[in-house]
Image (tube, rainbow, N blue to C red; front, side):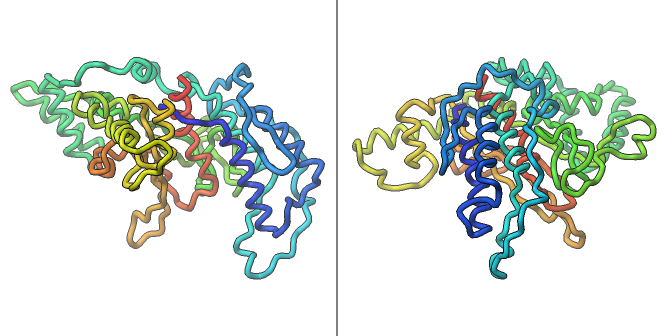
Length: 391
């Protein structure tokens, strides 16, 4: 997969500053002008960008030789000491503008830039995956998957058939079949799960989060013991008395790497994944040089996509991803605010792309409230994608 991470750091920081400027109705944040550039300049040196007096612009990455973090969620980069915002003067805003005010603090800028720094140095070895999955990602299977063992087939069918029931239900049926004179050997619940993971590529990771859905404890927030927003403890105090650290709430990430490999596992599915590149090259072949595309009908017809194909940035075997996330009300008569993230694959024809078998699960934030810092929840997914691109 090909993508450009250079410049995203500058864009993110610029957007944060611009939001604050629009909210205050002034041309600058209410901070000492001699302090703000130095704060950002110190952070941008880690991400390979330069800070100008009026704007931020990307520069070639010169930090590749920097020590890489041993984990995307366990060793945040040391951040400079900056005075807190308690002394910041308040601004009188018109009544109609109050609802548009975004309270951006210097800490928000520091955290955003640290997320970017970690993404730029992402590595699969530091992503918390087991060795078996790492081996599969680096050396994908090159033969079509077949299941010849009837007991394995039965185990998968049983697992899918009782999908809405409990693990105890699966085990009860398994034990009943084991007593059959034919001696049916159904896989254990754990083994059938691992078998399905290998077939589908759907591997999940659990991460700690605030019990009020404020933040996920990932990246720069990985070592916090309480929520920086609401102050709630990260770990269960009752379990803590027993000397155990058990998080009070979790969210789940389903990483896309192995799922994308599964989409290319058979000759037919691999052929379907060529739609984007073949369509883009066909458009380029029939469009005169310097002339715009006559009709936009899908991703391959976009000008940026065509330029990337024409200059070789996107090749025939590169995979593109589109990330989408939104909230969902799961219960009719109960308040809930579950957020679900998905990956779409533009390599596929639009007649397939939006159908259930081809929409890849990305993450689930269980609620109960609206997440305040979406970056912290999306970070594991984007860290994984960044690591795939770098390797």
